[in-house]
Image (cartoon, rainbow, N blue to C red; front, side, top):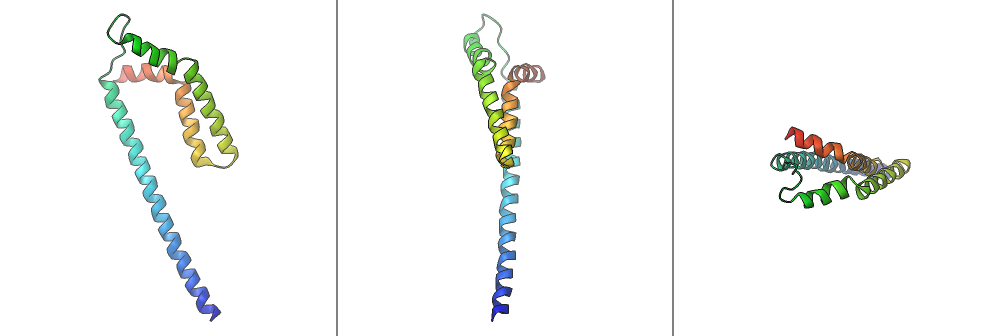
Length: 122
C-alpha cells in the first residue's frame, strides 16, 4: 500500500514540476517580448522628438522635465535610492528584484548622457 502511494506521489511531483517550469518559461518569454516591444516603442518615439533649443515652443516644459527633474537632484536621488534598494535585494538573495532596481538606478544616474545619445541616434 505504501509503495503504491509513493509511486503516485512521485508521479504527481513530476507533473507539478513540469507545469511550474512551463509557466515560468512562458512568463519569462512574455517578459522578454514586452521589454523588447517597450524598447522598440521608446526608440521610435524618440525619433520624432528632437531636443528643443532655447526660445522654441515647449522648451520650458523640456527644461523642467529633463534638465531640472530627470538630470537634477530628483533624478539623482531616485537613481541612488534604486541602487540602494537593488543592493539590499541582492544581499537578501532576491536577484529577480535586484536586477531591475540596479539597472533602473543606473539608467537614472546616467540619464543626461542617455537623452543626448538617443537624440543623436534618432
